[in-house]
Length: 363
Image 1 (cartoon, rainbow, N blue to C red):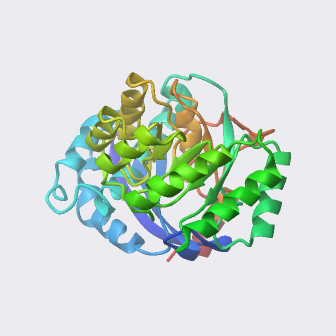
Image 2: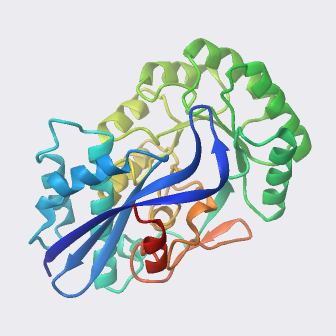
């Protein structure tokens, strides 16, 4: 089998309503899609995600530079292809951000193609570990929700069986955040897993002060409290605070993850297949986390489609993050039953997008 063509595109897809975290307000997201076609008539699909803009930059990197190392290659030499992309023409202009995200789409497409070629779901190709994984829901916790909407959505999600819920904080007034968390905890009760996500908004002083105050509300984890490059600051927080520090959606390679782990600066590893260069590097980071006895709970930049396979294939998966924005896009969307992901059975990585959705949203 040989790769004979690579097709790329950008889709602009609406969210179900306007959402906000501490940095972004958006009503659309962009999917940068890669389709890898083989000479045996089998194709694989991969994609990465942006929060509304920047997809054209990623696609340009893929078209101009990143897809060249794939052409004519055997897709089952995926690790060699990954290295050829990484050390290729984009290495000197960016080893994170747009280039590594473009690699993620292409690498995932190759894994999808391989799984289809052997007629197995990706998680079985990788060596299955489990057939269901608990899911927590993020889609009820946006800062753009009123407190009443927040509590109503989160209560409904727990009643639907989700094993936890996550809310956004990081407003200009941290006391307002604290009151919001207090009221949510009071309404949900003490037995519900409640995650809190700052989206990098705090400095170290604010995180130390208000992270301590959050301990009173039994936070299951504190997510991205600081800038993602501040390993030392996160290490100090991890030593001083009771809630585990969760991060990883803006960490782009195994070396940065290694440094976080070595310094005890992360306790829940949120590696994202769309940000870390695809399935190939994701597996390396997951294995590294396992060697430190750390769980992974992937950030849902893939709209759950690829991560559902990966959490079923590694031994240290804690949760699948559930954000249902893209369920209508995919031929085989994620299935969560009674709060648990059900391992997919269709061959591939569950990344095939419906043709009518491509026609509708293609830029």
